[in-house]
Image (tube, rainbow, N blue to C red; front, side, top):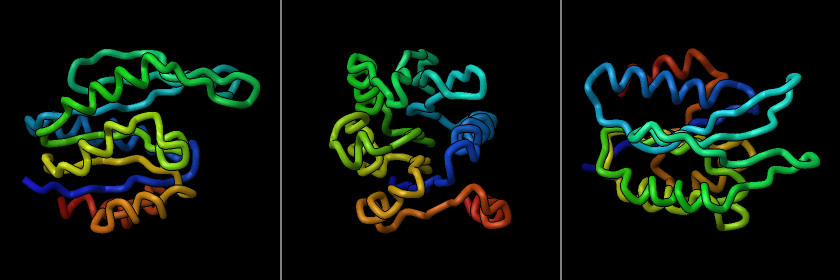
Length: 163
């Protein structure tokens, strides 16, 4: 099985995680096996203060990061746990990686196990969330991936119908 890789991008707060969650709901309604991680934010007074990683296969959620002085402090144990999740995430119908950011692309740490899972191609569809400023990195790594900017709704509707 060699799956389709979809790079999901859009500005902060544009709904990338919401898109992934809706896709997961639809895939599950078709009876598809869904794995991977979605990252859920905790908000206070209009500001994101914490991030939680949610394992889509087991339903387990762990604290991933907390904002400290305008920077994110990541929980190393959760990063290791997440890499374990990705190590056992394929084969699957849908693989979700929310998200690969500067930690992975620039610093070479974080969800590094997600790269092997996506590179394996052992899925029907992989949703890989990437910030606009890091799309070039993702396109170099996965040159055959389809880029979906979720702010372009008409394009999104057409591409999803093609799946």
